[in-house]
Structures are given as structure tokens and as C-alpha cells.
Image (cartoon, rainbow, N blue to C red; front, side, top):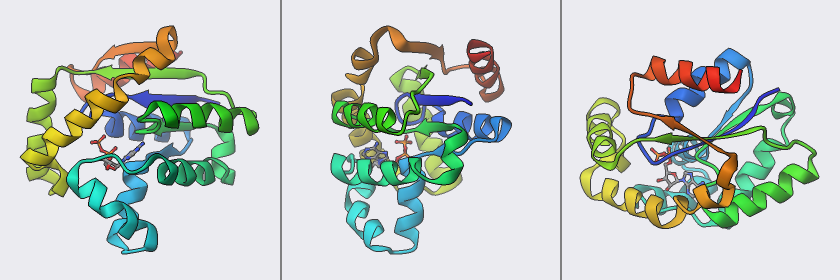
Length: 185
Ligand code: ADP
């Protein structure tokens, strides 16, 4: 019953790794970014609320993200485990997650940080802008996302401290997957 928190800067490969591991372990990958993109494309009330932040490469307010993740983690399919990709991204989110997980008696078992140097992240995000047409991968916005990461998300490494397992995210996707699997085996 894996319950894994996958961390790392934008472009580190969390989404891809999360996808592969979730299908292998048959647990949901829960990613606020995926949820927001779906809501935005359907122009729901939540989509409209988060669009301006997401388009600008800024973090969506904690209260909004926390509510979304709380209700997602309480759904039936999450009882058998999960991979959190892109949550928590602030210390306030991490604190809220601790409270929630103890309420639902589902402690996490690993925190993984995918480590990739900034110049490689920028190259990856720029090519994703071309391949996938993601509006938030344009150059100015990439700068904002990295700024948000450094200011608000990087401090989580200290929050989780020795619980964090560092993984080099620079090799190929499949090599990184193998490293994660070995580490969690
Ligand atoms: P990436 O990891 O490549 O930056 P995501 O798909 O995880 O992209 O997130 C896309 C956008 O969704 C973020 O730039 C942000 O606006 C919003 N978002 C995602 N996760 C969070 C979070 N935990 N807290 C606040 N905003 C978030």
C-alpha cells in the first residue's frame, strides 16, 4: 500500500514518474496540477478560480488546494494507497496534510525529492512548451514557477528533513523509475 509524496521543482519529472509508478502499483496519482488543468478546460467554478494563478506560474492559494486534495484523498480509490505529485508545495500545505493523514489514519511512507539543476529544468520546460503546448511553460512564466519553487516549496526539504530520499532526476526517465523502485523496495 504505497503512500508516496513526490517532490521536486517544475520540470523535474514528478508527473511522468508518478504516472508510471501509479499504474505499476495500481494506486491513483493525485496531482493538483492535473486536477486544475481539467477544471480549467471545463471552465468550472474551481477552474475559473485557479486559472489566473496557474496561467501566471504562481501557486494557487493554500486554502483552495488543500480543500481539493482533502476531498480527493477521502475518495474510495485512495484507500489503497496513492502518489502525491505536486502536493504539498508550501509549508502550510504540508502541515495541513499531516493533520489530514492522521485524521484518516493513512500515514505517508516515503517522501521522494527529484533533484535536477535549474538550467536543465529550464531546457526541459521550454521543450515541453513546444511538445505539449502548455501555456505555463512559456519563458516568463517558467521564471515565475521557479521563483515560486525556490521561495515556497524548497523550504519543504527542511520541513521533512531526514525523511526525504534524494534522487538524481537527471538520467533518463526509465533509469529514474528504476532508482525510485529500488529505493522503495
Ligand atoms: P509543474 O510541476 O510542472 O510546475 P503542475 O502541473 O504540478 O506543474 O502545476 C501546474 C500549476 O498548478 C502550478 O504552476 C500552480 O499554479 C498550480 N498548482 C499545482 N500544485 C499546486 C500546489 N500544491 N499549490 C498551489 N498551486 C499549485
